[in-house]
Length: 238
Image (cartoon, rainbow, N blue to C red; front, side, top):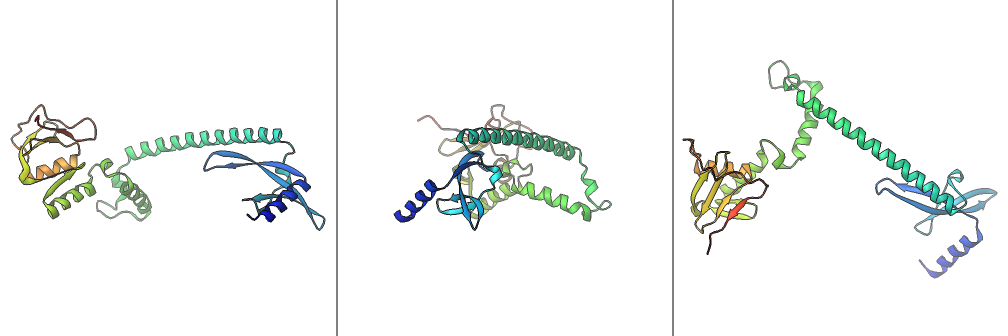
């Protein structure tokens, strides 16, 4: 802002009556105390607030207070009111979420279809669209069939001939042996001596597709899925 314009604003502030008003930003949860100035134009009285320093905005007189103490008290009341509002909204949201969850747990998908076919009833289509949209946006690891994640892994293997998961890549030719766990897990031993127990069920399924499963029911008790979502890797002692 030019110096002459700044001086004009300062002179304006000094020569006009000032009052305070309070604003609340819902997105940030912050309360602000601001100043408004009295201006008379053609015998009409206006209270102006200069947004960004030089953009006038008319403020309703009934929202103004004369002292900073009054403004601070009003700001505190506004903060408390919005706090109670947020708490109420959070409670209602939680209750609604619980209600919807219970409804879906009891929901029978047969109610969506016409007779015993695969065609969705017209009145049920918006419901199906909403459920599908939610399912498509949740992380792949949260999807029970995890189709997309598995397809991506299979596509990578077909295109490159490599297995890749959590920063580790190896080829089929590098696999020395595979140990099968009772819980469906596998431990892959590589030619360099590394032993990898994948935490990802999709990655485990891909390994079984390529190398086969233990159809005779034998398994290693020492092999099981890692408790955390990270693969377990055992490096050979050098």
